[in-house]
Length: 169
Image (cartoon, rainbow, N blue to C red):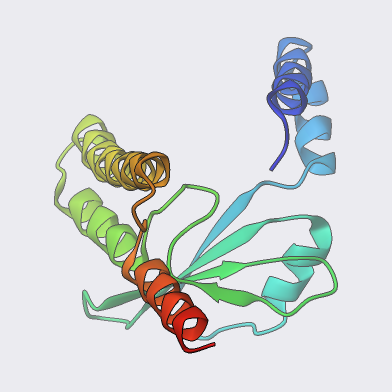
């Protein structure tokens, strides 16, 4: 993960390009890959496209698969890296913790929202809900580490297994 200073410098370069006018902003965004690409695929999937995005520096792709003439939707989140095959994600890294079901819920909310403002508010609620849940989990894990209690069941099992191994030795 980039440091705060790296993020600040990157943000400053973006703002500088935007301030210099449309031509400079366009040139800047041509050179800089986005962190996230969202594709809506109704008819077919271009299997090689994810690898090409990865080579460009895109970190994540969300593919929304739909069926023509239906409201059926499935979301697939993939992590991308240059020189590597895409890796399926259970939750977004770019938009921390957002799951495929969250993405589908957001799309449904956008479909139902009569105005652009209501559509944006619906998606924002879903993202904020997931962020709050993610922060709560991290806070619980941190408090467990401070108290010496296992942060999860796997760690508890590992500790009990280590204790029984030590006792039998």
